[in-house]
Image 1 (cartoon, rainbow, N blue to C red):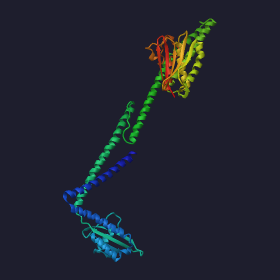
Image 2 (image 1 turned 45 degrees about the vertical axis):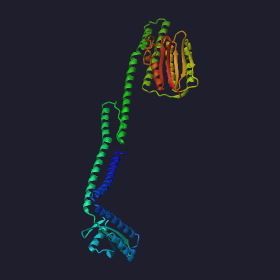
Image 3 (image 1 turned 45 degrees about the horizontal axis):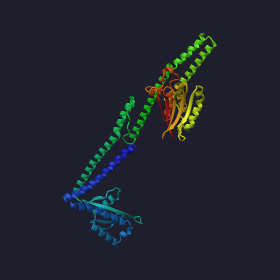
Length: 475
């Protein structure tokens, strides 16, 4: 509900409630006044006024059901006279302001005054005649001749005015007090529901302007104020995400600059040295020249791989690479992976074997190309650190009730326990003397696995080899 409409509704309810409470208070006041002060006569007169008013209204309604000629009937006039006499009232029948019948004599001036006041369109139903107060009612008839017939009913009011004055003062005073209290309550409600929340929103907006995005903005208040708080909170979250993303961009840019200036410098310097050796004639024989060129080529391949890894890691870190998930059979997928790497491992005199311990087919939701990069990076590491003689890498498939577990295990010398927690960090080398690649392989693998809502970790023992574990949700 809009604030203006709500404010109008609450004020309307306040007025109506004040009127209702005032009516109830007047009833209680009248009852108490009668009981305490014994003014039964006044109350009887008060009651009689209402009874007379209702009675003459009933006479009017009955008369309007007849034709005017019926009012001129002597029998009806006698009946009318009896009824108004019981009420201590009077009845006058006129045509064109000429009196045809009257139960009590009134002078022409009073009759004319009664006709004039009863003929206006106001809600007034009392007149002063000859120093007395009368309540009146009239019924008008249109005659076929074009004349106007009138039935005028007059009843004197004898209620004492002192009680009414007291009642009026009490009614006005009570209504004023209740209305003021209701307005105070409305002001209090609006203060709690609108003014205080707006004040808090103002403080929160000031903090956001000053760059403090840590404070959560609670949804409080009424209607639009609550919506405004929700909007400001969403804005704060978006701004916080933007700041975080900007920091990520800055960190990523620094990371790329640092990597290019540090990690790429060594292989580029090496390439430059070998080429300069050829130019300067250091490699004098064809064999030596071929060796220098092959070394430069391998270093260039390494630089290219490092650049690719740097760009891939940067995009993964900034969530800029979309994933294309599809439901795949786990065993079939890793059979393909083993087939892809089989020749390479045989060439390096290493054994690569898939061990399927699944009792039934298991489906996982994966991006097939991205997960291939994970497997490749882990297998490249395993190939580097596996035993050179009788080297063996096993890919073992297992499952729990909710997850599929993939273990890629080598029979290398293993990783010391104190170094195991750091192997998924970028550029971390367990053995710096055997540095190869970009140092981002496992860091990239970790990013991709977590992009699948999976987990990756390592277990190792010195002298027994290393196992990289991947956990993916089953579908």
